[in-house]
Amino acid sequence: MTSRLATAATPDAALALRLAEAVTAVDAPDVVLAVTHHGRRTTISGGHALAPAVPRHALRYELGSVSKTFTVLLLAALARTGVLRLDDPLAAHLPDLPLRHPASRRITLRHLATHTAGLPRIPGDLIPSALLRPYTDAYATYDTERLLHTFARTRPHHRPGTRWHYSNFGVALLAPAMARAAGADCRTLLARHVLRPLGLGGTTLGPGDPATTAVGHRRDGHTPVPGIGMGPFLAAGAVRSTPADLLAYLEALLDARPKAHRGPGAAPLRRALSDVQIPQLRHGPRHRETHTLTWFHHPAPRGPLLFHAGATFGQQAFLGFHPASGTGVAALATRRGDRCRLVETAYGLLHALATGR
Image (cartoon, rainbow, N blue to C red; front, side):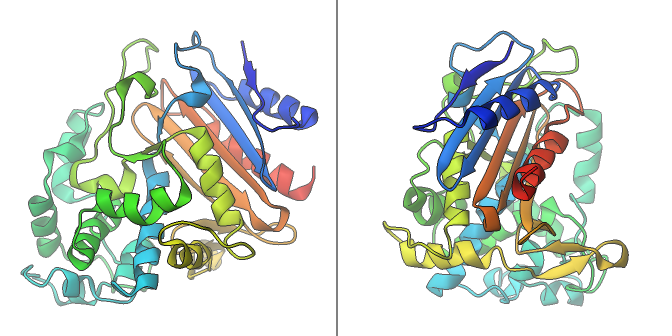
C-alpha cells in the first residue's frame, strides 16, 4: 500500500496523484518520490514492505554516486575561496607521492571531477574482493595510504583530458587533495562549506544514527545489507541524506543564479552552485552526451535537465532538476536486487514535469 505525505503548505493534488502512481511503478520495499516546484514541495512514499517504525520520508538513505555531486560542489566552493584551483595538478596537492608515470603528473582536479583523468572505475587490486564478496564493503579494505600508493603505480589509460571514463577511483582522490589544500579532512570540509551553509542537518558523510537509517536487503527480500562506508573512497559514494534535505539541496541549485544564500560561506557557495552547472565537455557516440563538473546534462525544452543517479548494494537514488521550470526531483529506494526501476521512473517524471506533460 502506498502511504501519502504532502509537505507543501497547499498540496498540489494532481502532482500528488501523479507521484503516487509513479511510486507503484518502482519495485522496491521502500520508495520515496519528492518534487520541488518553485519551492513548493510534494513528497509521496510507499513500497512493498511493511512501513518502518520511522516514516519512510524521515529516513536517511545512502546516495551512492549521487554523493559525487556534493564532493564536486565542495571542490568548486574551495576553488571560489582561493584555497585551490580546478586546474591545479593533483600532484601539486600530493607533493610527496612518487608517481611512476609522467601522464599522472598532468592529471588536474578538474580531470578527476569530470571523469577525464584516464583512471579506471576502481583500482585493479580492489576487483577480486568486490567480486568474491559482492555484499560487503570492499572499499573499506583500503585506507588512504593504500589509495594514494595505488594511484602512484597506476598508468592512466589515456592522456588526461582527452576521454571520458567514469571513475570512483578518480573522485576518491579529490578527498586527500582537498584535505591537503584546506587543512581539514573531507568530512569536516563538507560540513563547513556545504552542509551547514545550506542547512542540510539530515545529511552526513558516512554512517549516521542507525535508528533513522534506511536498510536495504539482498535478493531474498529479507537478509539486510550492511551500510556502506566506502573507506577512503567516501568522496565517491558515502553521503547519506533525507528526502527533505535533498529537496533543499535541489532548491539551492535551482536558485543559484537569481537568489543569494545567507549564512557562513554563502557567497562562494552561491557561485559554486552555479559553477557546477556549466557544461564542461561532450562525450559518448558522436559526442552527444554533455557533462558539467558533476552533473549529467540532457537537452529539454527551454533548457537542460541536470541529473545524477547512484546505487549501493541495498539502495538506489536519483537527483535531477530543470532550472528553466524551477523543478527538482529526488527519488530514493531500498532494493532487493539489481533493478527496481527507480532511475527510469524518476527521470521520466522529471522530463514530463519539465515539458509540461
